[in-house]
Length: 249
View 1: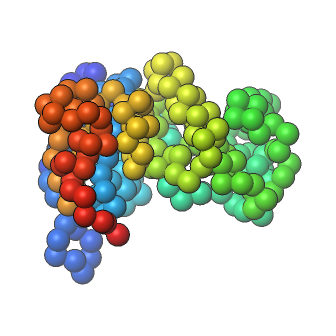
View 2 (view 1 turned 90 degrees about the vertical axis):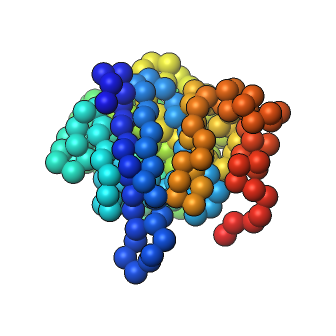
């Protein structure tokens, strides 16, 4: 692992119990510090499994993962203090208010008192939710929930942020607010690992991408270089060339 690398993945594999075909099949890639790295692929390609392993949510079957030179096996608790996770599913308590959710999550990261209150208020204002802090999450629209979900992942100001489909199913305005703020966080030094089915968004956001299909990395590089290498007009055309047009469930 180079000194500039935030994440090093070497021959990572995962086979779920009772299955023969691996969900992740000996993949290797590096995420450099300070970049937005996109892990892209069709449904069932292995994206979420890979992200879940990197976040310490599930155990790998084989291979090595280091995050900021820390071993995912031996130093996972230290790693968890340095990373933020924004899952595809909304990870909020529906019968608590926005403020109560964020206070609870902040407490889990050791944030308390005036610092936590000010940070919650700051992020709620940034994401246009400061007038909704005392409303229950189950009254929020999809876009509002996505924005709170993102705040929950960055509240402790992690060095590395993992995002699994952060803008899925949201309105154009919410999507724009989220992506622009991700660019701001990255410009300030945060490393971001991102998955999405939205190829235009990925092309706009990511400094480098890896395309995964059937558990294997089939392309890795900058969007510009890969588009040019495969004689495609944009990332979506490239993606379809490499993964096919057949529907995935």
